[in-house]
Image (cartoon, rainbow over all chains, first blue to last red; front, side):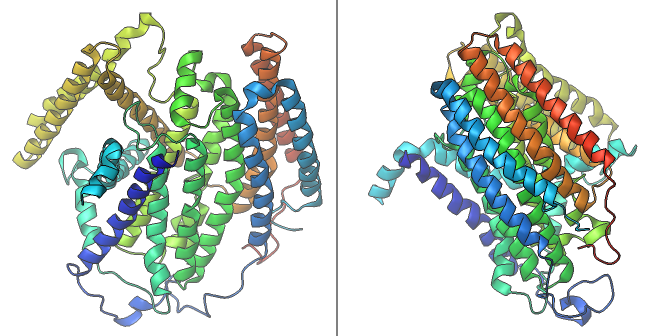
Length: 121
Length: 437
């Protein structure tokens, strides 16, 4: 029903415009930014910041993101199955058990091989 | 101009609600902040804001004015445009999720037939605001806080999805309005049919919102303020607006799918029809309390504000009382009373979020990830299987529904207990020296 999305689109425009317009209007009302002293430096608990902030960070975040993609796709497959469950009956249940079973085997492998640990030993 | 009006004419009512939400939401979010401060104070045995208005009622307005008029500092070497746009993404994603939220049978901007999926998908876009904000701030703390925040949200997104699937099995539709109507038809809120799903949704929802006890990425003693470190003034207020709007969204989804949406308790039972007058009675009691406290205020201006607030509550009571006297089929009756029940249930969610925040100690980040990946995902998977099996047993084999669901719940709790016991036998790894990220 694409006509339902017209109010949503207009609402999105309003919702994005409200903070933008408020920021722009109040830029002329609030005091101008005066770059004095350490105001412009990033905060690091009082000590001078060391090094560039765009440095390296752990690979764990990447692994979490990849695992999320896999499990989220599984969840997405569950949504239409859940909606149509009334007409799918026992056949739908068994099929979905097979699907979830395959993914559960993968999950158990991840669990036991330590890929889901945040801290590696 | 004429064609634009013609084009918009069938959408005038939803557009009215859209404008109302955009206009009212910042004020409402401000008052939720006040509510949180009062609840925090109550749990900590003190009074909270009392000075700015009677009982702190004008505090949000003072705070909003202060934040708007503060100097707007943008750190050196920050990505100026991304720095500008990140809070906007956070706020827009959260507000857009409110567009499909059924505040009542009448108050809904758009009743999409994929409403629930739309809301979950759009509220996930808020992660962009967090990560872009942390990255553009050119600060170590901000970047790490943003990445941790994103990893946390993403880990619990799976658990949220699976918990929602278990509720969807009972509802049979993604349209928010039809989910509530399914609960009206079956005569029971889905929380009583799928309690484990509801609790998983509650816990995972709190983790999604980065709220305590899962708020390590933004706790003051840990990473300063995480991704919000370099944001001050109104930009910080926008992030906060986004966070509280997301709280409303999580509460709204939970209310619609599990707590019966805009239905009053016992919606079809005629013996409980007196509950229709409960909203009016509640607001009358609130009015009475306001007028009772008015003469005790120390200063005339406080008396005036509290008196006005009392009149506001009185007008709400009048509207709700009038709505309850309308015949049962009138749209206004269902609409106004339904809005009260929906907002009351969402407020219940918000109150429990605040209660948990000030009761439980904070989770360490690896404990948090362990909870999400090692515990909530298998438990919610088993829960989905259990509810599915119970429904098939009810529909094909003729079992009573509650029997199958009790069996499913017991199986899920058994799996959860087994996971906890298996975990407790394994020693928890301490982080190697100097390696915690």
